[in-house]
Image 1 (tube, rainbow, N blue to C red):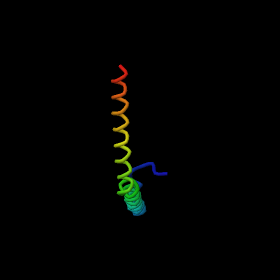
Image 2: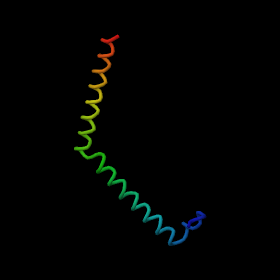
Image 3: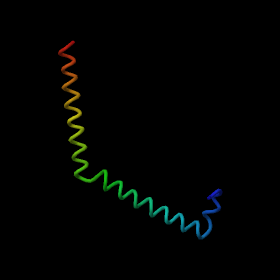
Image 4: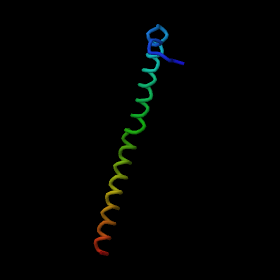
Length: 66
């Protein structure tokens, strides 16, 4: 277990830093491909539009009732 920052100053510590950096880039790329692909983005826009339409519908319905 790493208990001190000096553990990263060794040659093995630098290797761990490089591997963690590569791993973080890998997960970032997967995250971007998953959540910002055109199909998912279009579906989210569609859901946002549906949410706005439903909100306006119920808002107008409440105004008519009151």
